[in-house]
Image 1 (cartoon, rainbow, N blue to C red):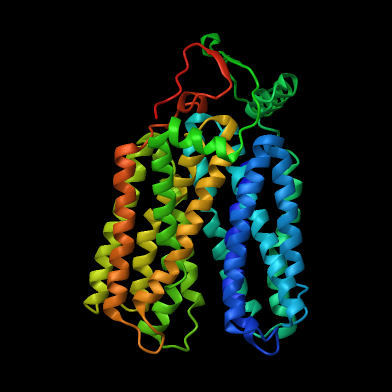
Image 2 (cartoon, helix red, strand yellow):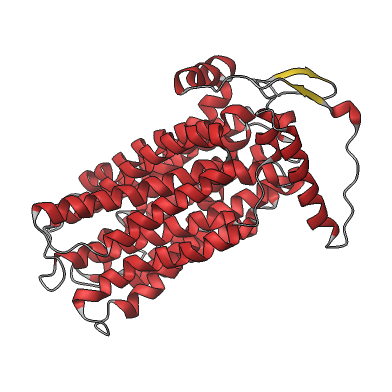
Length: 467
């Protein structure tokens, strides 16, 4: 189940990395001969697709169910990404087709975030929910590393320039076919079924899960009857009503979710979209190939959530999120001063990034976990979508800010990059401080203990958490 659902992040890491590295190749006359501006707009269109997809399919996930949506969103991604490979030229109609397919692919992935994170939280036992969700979110970087490794030989000239970039864009859709087969075994969320008055189907889903657990030789103990909830299915909540729930009923949690998502998105987008500029202009030379340096960077980002995830369930959410954010910020400050002192080269700069983002990646993954578990069941997918959209908007500004601070390519500013690093560090430290003050101790608690469902009529022995 974890593999079947978690692969959405692998797809996104794969897709963005391929689009970033292949994009610059599309300016070649032997490929599509696009202008630099046209290529740069590809990332913007994909990002817009993610935001729209998250909002549209997040709403539908709360209305139609998790299982149905993660088939729909995967199919949309498959269609958009596969069609990208069939772009024929650089004329007006071809560009329209190219941008439309990138938007569709982004919409599919954006919709995946809301449906998948909701399903994982609602199906994973409370004592493992944190480490599972964080590890799954961290697989974005596994996809990025895979894409970077594949692209080195793929774009080396072994395949003709007219085909190599098309093959690259077809890698994700091929993987999506495998994922569809895996997801057929994933049940619908019993929590979602109950909230929509489909008690018999929820019981069947629970029985299926219990049979699968029993087949491994483990026992599933009975649930104490004092923890029973009486549910009365209520009308669906739209985005306007959702905002009232978020900022009136849960102002502290909403502030926490927004700050965590915005700060991690700002830092990641700033470093991710400027790392090649930094390596080329300050260390290797303007014509250097920097793609090989991306692989260890991606691996460091992947290992952080994988190795630190369990501590979010043992040490606790608040301490670990605050700690990883603040530590990442502090390490970035140290690396900024090392850069200013001229103590770094391309290799040591990459090592510094690997160490910084080992911690930052775990914290960023925990930000997605936070916004998916601290709000009521009925609005979970929409809440994920809203905070994801907010984060993407702020994150999209970060590369522009860093580019302006670093300066033009022919005359990059060392002092500008130094202060850009300090800015990113301060942003992360602010996120850590907010987590320390407003963090929710959700570790090893059922979702109903963390946030009482809106449709509960009567509850015994279950708490719904504070604002």
